[in-house]
Length: 236
Image (cartoon, rainbow, N blue to C red; front, top):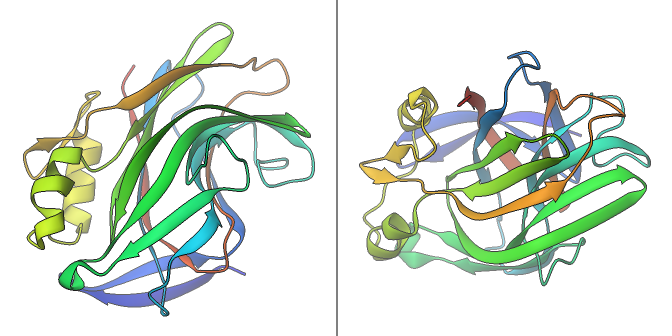
């Protein structure tokens, strides 16, 4: 069951919605005339045991209405991107915890584009990535006649490699998040470093069974996933 809670970070106390083996859904809120949007999420994982874990799947996506989303027994239609994939395994991949002198982060086994229609889930191309303690994770979604092109957009590799891993990168604040949303571009910048899209892949998809009009944030583990903010930027 989702709960509202507080957590203290280096930037102060923040409130969040914590979910466990659940799916957070909200209407897209910008109508259906868009051709490209970026869905952005500020999140963290509560891991009191500071442990590694396996079979972790965190997803951001779009679904056809809230009645039959990704996590339901029968899905009207869903396309998105899953962080935590081992060669496209639906159940998820390995998440390796790194204390990093207090500025903790996870090494993630990989990510995959994912589609679910009815009872069939299909995983596509894979890549690898990181999840810092309070990252801004996002997807860029571009509609086509018979396909949706997804790309992973997260805290840039340059930031993580040169600053986060040396303990100098701060926790993401609401101000950083809002600044990211306000940038109507395919490569918004955080602290001067662009969140370039990677892993772009076209997923065959038809909206004949419903229009993509609902945001989905899905998490399959009992370690609480803390959602601090969710936003949408219409690119085109």
